[in-house]
Length: 394
Length: 142
Ligand SMILES: [Zn+2]
Image (cartoon, rainbow over all chains, first blue to last red; front, side, top):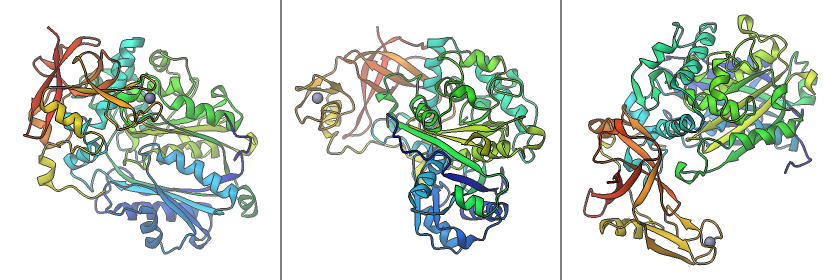
């Protein structure tokens, strides 16, 4: 059921910023988030004192239980609407959905969305991995040595069995993401990558090789979201409107999910499309959470870009890059651009917004007016979709 | 979340039973995997919880699983999640579908993990780790 009350076009992104990304030693998660925030404020052309809401997410390398409050103190503001949201990798899209609703209902007028983490430089690799298993259930999962990657891997393995998806098709996802990263200044991985390179890289957890898995990085990203009216008053040149969002939480434990090859992304995106009044066919470019190659294939299906079971051939036909049905992750994604943990999906937003503004330079998808970002986490336990558009889509 | 010390990271995590699960872990000490059936709606559930997850009734009754199931999915871990599991690699984490219906996460014992396939039949084996904890693992069925 879709509530008739809608956030469509009520709020707009007016400022975007990132910190240095990739390997950023000697910088705390708070600095990364704050640096991204300075850049987002400058991009919007507003002063920090105009922010009255702060929304953030969890940082593994930061000891703060309330990252939002710590960040507000760090940048010297006292918001009257604020929270740290924790739905793992899905957090990014939930922040945009909730920000739009909070602005529409008057809880806040101008919201800073910001996250930062330093998984690469702030934690040892073993500690980072251990942090990932700590998110699995201590009684029914952790004792068996199950990293979160393993949960995703089991869904991919079953997808291969049910639909004939191949390791080569998974590898194609990594190859296309690398091509995109090679076009993106500052991307962490910029050497050419072939299907053979992926298949001959070390196995992490079957069916995933090293290059089927996302990177480990440092970085922060920030966004300024305000009401459509305020965006007008400020004379923002190209506000990017939040048109609709949806979420779906299907399980905590993967063993409680009946069909492990179809995810909550199906429901979250159906809600987002209905609320935005658009369909998958209308989307010009998308940010699709790419923690693993198989994740992308399943998402292409569940987000409605291709029929169930056809994600593999869809990728092999190069439908996810320039000239294809829907160019996704044109920055290179978590697989080849940057993956600082939970903030990673904010970088999908950053790229889609650049595309919609027409500021993506050599990477520009011509005529991009309508974009989608899908964030997910915790072995598909959490799913959130946001649809964004230019003024022409209102 | 607080930081984990290096010393803690080397220890394998052991389950800490809670108010819902204490009987499950007691049963496993005797080699029994306990499931629950709701006397009101007939739903069979795992993991153990002191309430039917379908109709929220208190009227859930324990019974012993046959221990038979199939591999609904699996992934063979080559890169361990932390130092504690490094010596075990490669090992197969299993998503087992029990013949009673529910699924569970477990891991394979007794066979080369590289030889297993989807939908193979498996059987329960309990493995004693401490006086308080035995883990439910699975081997390929005879
Ligand atoms: Zn019941």
